Length: 404
Image (cartoon, rainbow, N blue to C red):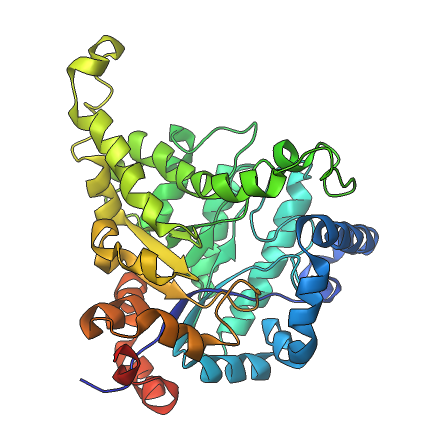
């Protein structure tokens, strides 16, 4: 075994500055894009000023502006990966941090609210075309997560998954929130789960989406109502992880993993991994107890496993920004499910101080467990080329000394 660790970031982000997506957007949408881009940028500016503390972000960004272009500049990206000792990365779309979201609402979260279906699909496929091109630079190192606005049209989503595989992408992200659309226990989505299972495409949910208007007011982000709605951010951060887990609650109880036992799913950047055991315990309780809910009928008979067993078999955890208290519950979550991520280029991530992050959180840590969390679990879950990644790790990766 090499002393150099294979490090895989299960949560990175990339995307072009929004106007630069135009060559990847079908020409029939160019006029609409020209109108939409300034409006989107204005909305992102407003969101940054109301949802984030702009002064703090600007101060963080100021000394690293050039490095942040690694969100779309490939050479800077390689510099970032080398600096953090990362052999491979899982790449999601981006959002307001660097204003490099795909057009027409096709970025991180894929919310259907106020979106035009045809345009959101156009923006998603523009990002997917760029992402496939980007990842082709080194497909062993870059695992691109395509945007799939599943809620609008299941058959179109099935065709998009096939396109993704044909173009080298074997991971997809679907909306975390479905709003007024059918939720994920509806059997209408079975063709989508089926093709993902058949083609070994991993389905991802990324944190962040939540009913923001309930927290920040109906006019968000245009109107700033923080004075009228005290505690809005505290409520959001206390609930956002439940919106990330919620699709899996529907999929587990809905029998998705019973019907599609080889389907793989990831939840990413939950921020509070220690909440997972209690969520699983809650579902297992309702699966195993009988008398308390007898009057509700047998709502378990279509499931052959406990909810926690489906979780263990089918679901991975992208543990971005994971801190030592979360790492200490790794066995309760399932050690083999936990995958670290640096969350580049977001200020809440470990970059550009990943070396210090490793020291703070992995010192005096069992080497076997640390190797799994920092890379080996992702190698296995995503089916990565371990031999190739070890060659890269031997050049840029940290050594096992970080666990001392």
